[in-house]
Image (cartoon, rainbow, N blue to C red; front, side):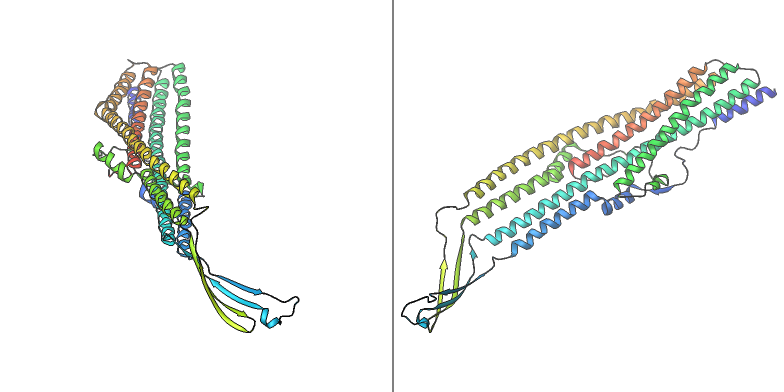
Length: 419
């Protein structure tokens, strides 16, 4: 009776070894919202994109400026020889000339500067959207790594209980020493899997801190991703997603801004072709007499009329229009691929939740009971435990694929999907 009691107690240890899911050592909780806020403030790629807008805004300052006036000072007919008195020959003058641009060139420059700023802002939005996608992906990679770590910790604890159970059975003479040695050797596999899962979880947190602009990577040991890997059903309509991609996709908006900019550049090149007039006014002293002079210089319709600049701008406009069509087609393809990935992942998640997870648990529990009764071999129990772990791990990986497909849809449509 005493022997059976000790075995039952050991078995109870095996069954109760599973820790509460998701319980890890106390760490600093990092939510996705906090990570996003810190990311927007400190990410270097975003900072570089913001500086590009500053460069474009400098063009706006230059566009407002008019051509500088010019001052010409002359001295003519300075006497070298001859009979005419010097004061009747010398001519001294000062002339101020102000070029006046034709074709509303200043207005065209200002318009082009604004369009260039629009392009830079669209590029910033594109960088922000892509970097936020990477942030979410890495954050959920950390969630996945934590879930896998929890599974491996559970396996380790379960196996420790199984080892204690078999140690009692060996002491009571129910199993041979060879059987106990087999159990002890299996522990190496569980310890190795746990070490790899621990390393993977730390590496994903390091990558997350890197994206946040953090330099203290020792903080990776202190933070935890404060969210659970669980499904949140999203109501998606493919036709609406396609429409959003056509209007909000960052790459489409960049291409459209480039078209507008190329049109502005073509208008500016055409205004440059009109040239400029230069009126001037000045003072001139001829001998002992004071005079005033005035005139204007006008361009003649010959020679260089900026034909090369106009042709180049027109070609760039055609390229920009082609890029718009290419960007729209690419956006639709990205929506299609991401939506099909979302459907596939959602169906797989449902399959796990409606049967596979429960069946794997039941298979392990039945095999454990059979092993306790001596009706199953150790290898059969280990296979059942391994299958259960693989099913749960694959379930969390499918959840990760589910969320990643949603994030890809956000990237392709340029809109946030509320879960």
